[in-house]
Image (tube, rainbow, N blue to C red):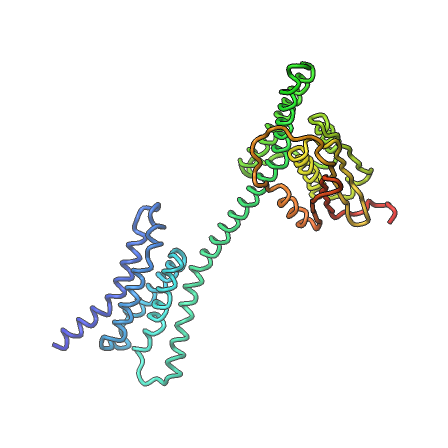
Length: 371
């Protein structure tokens, strides 16, 4: 009878090891496409194996120091713990990790007798080291995966923000010009065919410019393997921008750009200055199409370049247009961009019903310039 009981105890001692090994085989002995899915569902089977380990360690008669099943059982549990740490959802990991750690750290205590409390604590602490190692083996690639996904999400967010800025700054500017020209052509088509033809030419030019901007956007969407090679817009393109703005509507724009200002701004700051002027002119075209005059002034100082875009009061009622939106993202986005570069941007009423946008961007004096 003693031999029969001993055999049963040994069989029960082997049960957690066999369960852990079977769980591991069940997870990996699948087609490669489904292995990862099964690895993510190991938390509950591992919790069952850890519970069996605790039960056989403390509820059954001691099998003596010669039992090797417990050592194999601890090894399997450590492997499963690393796999669970790597692949299981966090909410399931929080439940199974303490249970498995207890099963691995406490099993040696059943094999020793007469040890003091401090010695038992020392033994359990020693077996915490492989538990920590298994968790680290699983946590490191998990952390790397989280960081990779975070980097991808940040890159996508930055790309979406850049695309929205490009679409707003350039496409919206050109589309606004098309709307203004179409409205002007509608009024003069019956009386002045030459002016109507001129408006149509400007519509064509603005439409081609908008298409070019959308082409650049599509190139950015294609990813890093097909980067756009077109340089960022800078202050050298402002004269043509002012000319196109004046020819497209009733508002006459004037540019005051002192020599050497472009050299004072970095490439990023120069592009930001161009975008700021585009946004200001687009807002004038949308909200004050009857303003007689708009001025764009660059005022350099020792450390900054101040940009002021000012327009007078709209002298006539605006033509019927589509319902105004609740506001775009142009000024808030440009304000954040200017602040990121170390500058400022603000806009508000000015003079007798006019409006003024003021921006200050960091600059450096050219070499040899007087201070």
